[in-house]
Length: 53
Image (cartoon, rainbow, N blue to C red; front, top):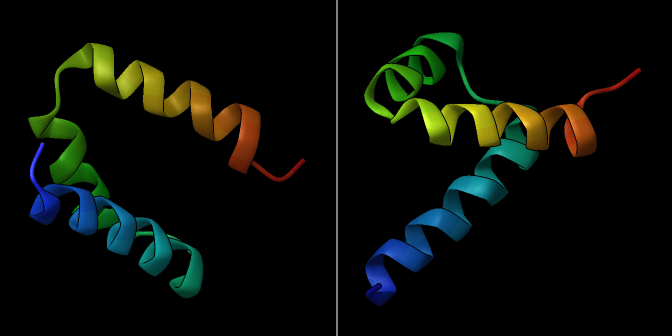
């Protein structure tokens, strides 16, 4: 992994937290491009750590 990828991942996480989420059209495009295994992991993470009950 190079520093550009790492910094992009960090910046994306900060931007999501700062802006209150990712716009739906961006989220849908990302989910369509990711392998299903990654999508499943991401959804489990959100259910456990992000979702507000």
